[in-house]
Image (cartoon, rainbow, N blue to C red; front, side, top):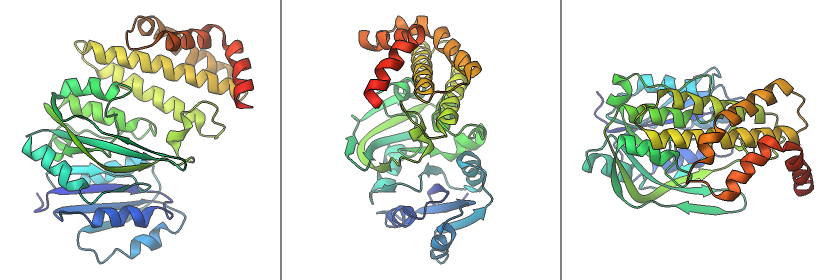
Length: 328
C-alpha cells in the first residue's frame, strides 16, 4: 500500500480547452497526501501536449493509451490505485482547494465507507449550488437517497470511496454503458459497504457541456448520440433493478419511476427527431408500460407528472403536436 492517502483518477478525452484548469485545481489542494492518475484515452487534440508539461510533477502519473471509453479508462486506473481512498474527476471540471481535505475528513473522522459533498453545477448561462445537510446513513439508505430526484445523485465526483471495498468485491464500471454508469457503480459499491457520511461542504464545479453524452438525455436533442445516451441510461437502470435486494422496496419503486419517466422522455425525443426506428420505439414503449402501474401508485410524483406519463404512452401524437409548437 502506498504512503499516500488518496488517489485522484481523471480520464481524459479531447479536453484541451478545460484540462489545464482541471489539473491546476487538483494540484493546488490544501493537502498534498495524494496521487493523481491522468489517463489520456486516445485524445486526438492537444491533450497529450498539455499533459507533457506535468511530467515532472512527483505526485502525478500520466498514461497515454488507445481510446476505450471512460468506463474502461477508469477500470484501467483502478488497477493501479494503491492508496486507502480514491476519488474521480472529469477533465471538464475543477475543484476548490479544500476538495480533498473535506472528503478525507468526512470519510475518516466519521469512520464511513463513502463520504459525499455538494455540487456546483455550471452551464454557459447559470451556476447552481446544491448543498446537503450533514448526516450519517446506512449504505442501503444511501441507495434510496441517490435515486431521489433531489438527492446527492449517483455521480462519482462528489464522493470518496474506500479502495479496499472496491478491490475486495471487484467493483468495476460496465464498459458497455456510457450513461449512468456512475450510478450503477455507486449502487454496486453501496451494496457492499455499511456507512455513508453526507457533508455540508461544496467544493466540486461540474461543468455541463452541450456536446457531452450526458446532454443526450434531454427533450428535443438532435445530437446524433441521443439514442445511445437514452439506451445506456435505461440499461443501467435495468441492471440496478436486477441487483437490488427485495427488501429495498423504496429504492425499487424509485427505479421503476425513473425507468418509466426516462422511457417516456425517449419516446418523446424520438418523435421530435422523426425517428423511423419503429421496432425500437415499440421496445421502449413496452418498458414504459411495464413500469407504469407501480409508478402511477407512487406518492413521489405529482398529478401533472403522472398525466404526462399517460399522455406520452397512450396519446403520443397529441404530445408531438404540442412539442412541435413549443420547440419550433
